[in-house]
Length: 482
Image (cartoon, rainbow, N blue to C red; front, side, top):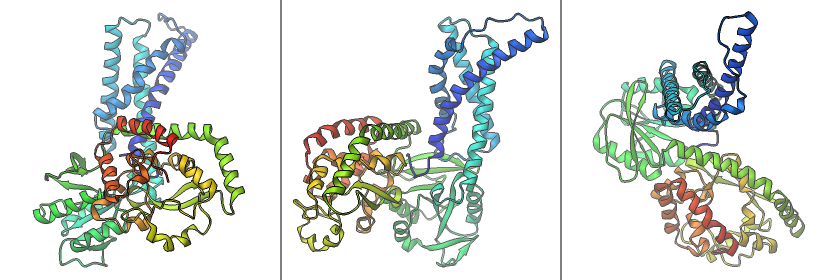
């Protein structure tokens, strides 16, 4: 799934490969023109081809732009954990370029397209290969430079059974530039005690307090040892991670879980079986990512005059800041600053405790009809959902998506039941199934959580589109708003 605050390596790969397709065509055309000019200057006895304008070749973009990402994906360039050596990457790119050129030649043959020389096709292939390899090297350099940033890391927890795990730890440490970091160790052997260190990695606990460790820290993945492990203990850990929505990696074994989907991957020459409870279709996730950012930019530009008017109205009608900023829990519990237009008086948080008896929601969430803390302009903003417009900046920053589970407060997350924490395994959104199903009319917190989990389990681009379309009449009619 589209994941952290930082731009995912895999998603950026798709985007930049499409850019490479455009650059390849333009640079190949430029080199072709230059080569013909040079041939004329030095008087080579060659038949000079007719040079068409670049516009005559522009239609090739409709083939090349989608072709590169699709072929790179098929050949394994966008695996969920892309840790290929440069030699493997070289082969993947070479194979993808060769396949693309073959497809292009077949397309020209079937549709009897003329005017494109063999030199031009060769130049497209050569330039594409060079640019793709250059992009790969720059990406590796970028992640190496970013390795000190907390947001640039996938936090990995290793189940430690003995010295055979040392090789696994060293392997992960050798891939720091990919954003992989062994965050801690869970001891599965009495010989290793909590509080110590192994290869510089802290021992954070034992199997008995694994659940507490996963809840209290932002852990992205749990990795098992690279040797056979006790079946019952392994299955218990897998179930725990499945409930919390945390990805697990285990060598060469298969376990039948109800939600998590298995996939076979390769890491450090080891076949790994991965279980994940979130969507894994990289191309669909890229489209979601791209549409989120594009829509956020467009909507911010369109709504900017309205947002300025709302900010002025909030400032003039009650003392306090125009924006309400609050720490919320994002992907896997990562804290981020959540933006809304202020719709309550400044002392709203202080009064929450004395109003707790009027809470109309079950569970850790507070909702109340005619909440006295809400300002007059705030009631209108909440009813029309205009108070949520600043969240478009959260989407632009990559902290939220247009569609996804609503971001909870950290103190609410602390009260979640284990099965409810899986909600955090997907990036939060501005609108969701709960929003279009009655919002505050749904007082059963468990039902709300089940809606979010259903969305995660059934996610698709089509489902996002349906939710966005249904959100429009819900907002216009203020259905379910309080």
